Length: 145
Image 1 (cartoon, rainbow, N blue to C red):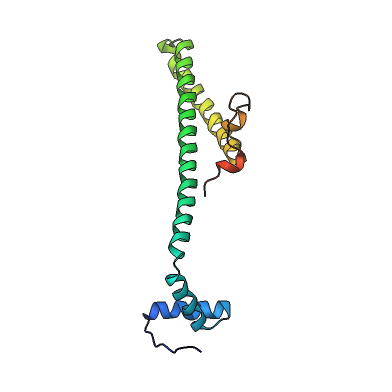
Image 2 (spheres, helix red, strand yellow; image 1 turned 120 degrees about the vertical axis):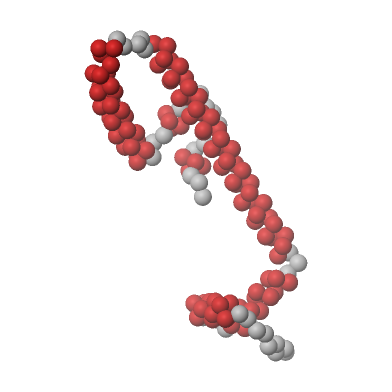
């Protein structure tokens, strides 16, 4: 036996219930009954908390990978700049203009190459061998949800 209840919903919520009933091809009563049962279920809060905990754990691991990758990038850039500054002699003033023109052309080539590499999905992390970085994340692990 079922007990009849009269409830009042705001128009926007009533419209959502109607649309869901049409999409799922079930009655509005069935939707409201399932929602109330879920709300009153004692384990509903536990399931929600567990889902949040799993999501937070995944986000924490992703942030740790981002921090590690950012640190790797910073170290690589630092090593390059240090090396470049130690081996590149200063240019005489009369050669500065030609060097700037050449530098702009090289930079444009660098940006084009970087764009192609980025578009292909290949990264510096892919170039690091497993024996150097044994716990390197696989390609699928590096995607962000």
